Length: 197
Image 1 (cartoon, rainbow, N blue to C red):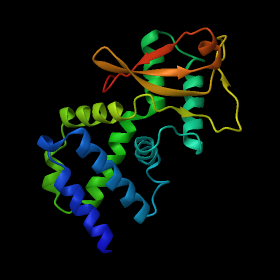
Image 2: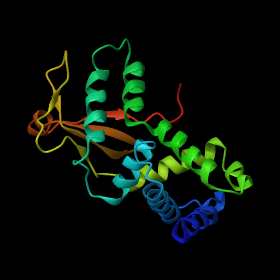
Image 3: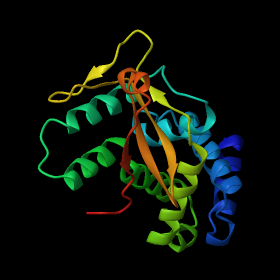
Image 4: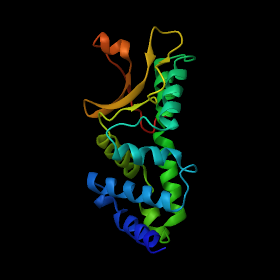
């Protein structure tokens, strides 16, 4: 229990708007990952677990969740009426909103001083949190498990095996990884649309 108490205390000390930096974000996510392991609740917080692992590895390809995300992205191309709808579906697949929901829940359930959690409950904090997270996972792909091939994108002459976050102007995009596109030296990128309806 000493470790758990120590981790919670460290998270509490880090949850200050003025302290939200790349270093602090990585520390918070590392601490949350340890807390999830202590409480044995990875299955309750799969997206948080994924992003915590993503921050700590050069690429992810060993668990089922990246495969699920890639399959959901491929499925996004099946039925869409506009470019904006496709962007929205692909953004839902990478689950940034779900990440925020899970982290808020983890904090609310574990931090005793609710004032600390309440003070960071505003959009600017969470937008900055996501931006810092994305900045740390740039060019670190998530891929299908090695025993799987690419997933075909129905209705398109395309298959994908992964994705990565890439910088784009002052923002970030999702790049879909495809051997066919790589052979042609082409890219397929999608805007990351934070908090858009």
